[in-house]
Each structure stands twice: as structure tokens, then as C-alpha cells.
Image (cartoon, rainbow, N blue to C red; front, side):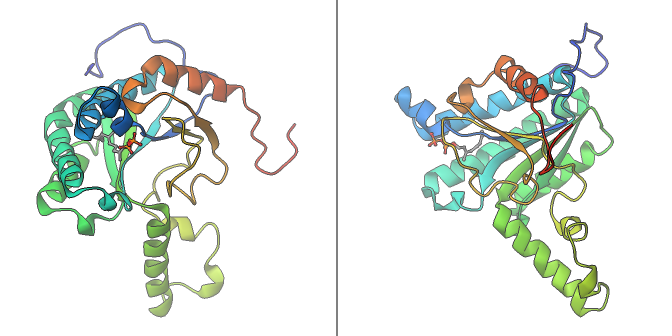
Length: 248
Ligand code: FPP
């Protein structure tokens, strides 16, 4: 991974480009099947793509990148695939910590950590701590994440505060609830990309994406390149976001 201090000619960030891009990295299984390989082969290829896209962020002016690595529904996959993915996450964190730090990436995890094994959660906590001082790219990895689950967990904590008298029911509004979400320190995503040709959001950032732009592209995640990422960011720069209003 390129180091933060290495001087190189920087392409101009895209005018009006997205500040926060969220990606549903879909298609690893099909990519592997097309090659006659087991699904985990595709997940490993997909993990390698993450680095390329993280590195491309500063070049296109993206400050926040959020990626969907494992959903609350992905436990329904075979035990072999789930165990393989958990092992991949552990290895990815151990292997990438140094490179991510040197590139200036701050890593955060969102999702429910309660169901994850102790070794993985320890590695996640260590990576968050090791990169806490970085600001070049804010990488958020959604792991055992589901939008509905996140809103339910947030509501439970909010209800506890109301029950304890720390929050008045009349103070619960669109400003208050997001403070209880896993993403409370992040801006809302401007652009959500889903690879592999499926046009659905699969429980990803439900509250946060209310006004996001969407790109559903046919490329399978292991084939997704920094060139395609830059092209999608550039095309976002031309969009007219009205947030329910009528525009200029
Ligand atoms: C969806 O493809 C992908 C996943 C459920 C896992 C995503 C994980 C990675 C890209 C690799 C690891 C990431 C990190 C951060 C190390 P799919 O298996 O549903 O593909 P299919 O629809 O073709 O079956």
C-alpha cells in the first residue's frame, strides 16, 4: 500500500464528487463459480480489491468509504463459508494493519459484535485503536451488520435513556435517533454502489441512505477496479440532488 508521505502527482479531486461512498461488494461467489473454484476463492479475491479501492479514495476526493463485508443475514450460508469468511476477516486485519496505518486510513467497524468470536473482536478493537489518529481515508467495515438490526439496537438504547429519565420522549426526533446508530460519527453516504447486477440494498445503511444516489453495476466485486470507481464518482459529480426540494 502506498504510504501517506510519498509525494506523487495527485489527480484533482472530482468537483462536486461524493465525500462518502458506501459499497455493497457483491458477486464474489459467482466470480469463483465462473472459474470452477469454491466460493471462498472469490471472497479472497474480493478482499484484495478492498485495498485498491481504499487507495483510490484520496485521488477522487472520497474521505469516507464504507464497505459491507458481512450481513446479519449472511449467517444463513453454509458453515464452511461462514467459517472461511471469519477466518478471512481475522487474517485480513492481522495482515493489513500496518499498510492501512501507513496509508493514513482510520478504520472503524459497524454492526453487532456480540455474535463474533473473541479473537476477531479483539483484532477489530486493536485495528480501530491503532488507526485512531489517521484522517486521510475513513474506512468503515460493516461486519455482522444489518440496517434493521442497527435501528432496533439504537432504539433499545434510546428507550433505556428515556426509561432512566436521561431523555424526554418529546426530544426524540430525526436529530436524536442517529446519535444512537453505529454510524453516529459518520456523515451520511452520498453514493451507494452495488456490484454484480443486483438492484437492491439488502438491509445496508437503511436510515443513512435516505437521500443517497445509487449505482447498480454489472461488474462482479473481484473485477471492480479503481478506474470504474473513479468513473462512478465522476458521474455522481454531475447529479442534481434536490433532497425533496425543487433545485436551483
Ligand atoms: C457477497 O458476495 C460478498 C460477501 C458476503 C462477502 C464480502 C467480503 C469480501 C469482499 C471480502 C472480505 C472483505 C474484507 C473487508 C476483508 P456473494 O458471496 O453473495 O456473491 P454471489 O452473489 O455471487 O454469490
